[in-house]
Amino acid sequence: MPLHLIKLAVGCDSVKDLQDWVRERMRQAKAQGLPRRHIHITRMTPKRDEELLGGGSLYWVIKGQISARERLVGIEPFRDKAGIGRCRIVMEPKVVPVTPRPMRAFQGWRYLAANDAPPDLGKSGKGLAAMPEPMRRELRELGLL
Image (tube, rainbow, N blue to C red; front, side, top):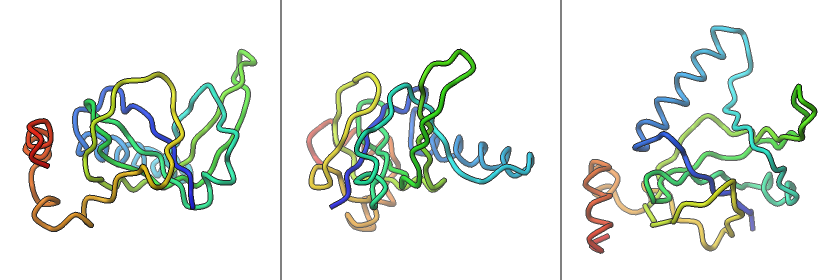
């Protein structure tokens, strides 16, 4: 069973914001002749990389809810110009909305077991996936989803 990561999407207000941001980064990478991969740099390197890269995803928390995921394709430890150890978390540049689930704020990233990960939104039925994100968020807060 794959292992996942979970991280706050700081500055994103919606899944669409995250999708737009990733799309823009891929456009810039293409224009510069760089590989089209979404990279997030973090301070700590996950130690369970084999489990993560065996089908894991990075789940994004947006405005207090686990809202989307991107499939993990690489974990690349490195040292920055100041000699500080960092890590590139490399993801497939495809944001997949998931069934929203409340999540409190935290620092850094956390591991997320496969059985605790929310299902993709498309698997929850077409009606829910077609619903505007603010409406899904409000219904979730009211306990109706």
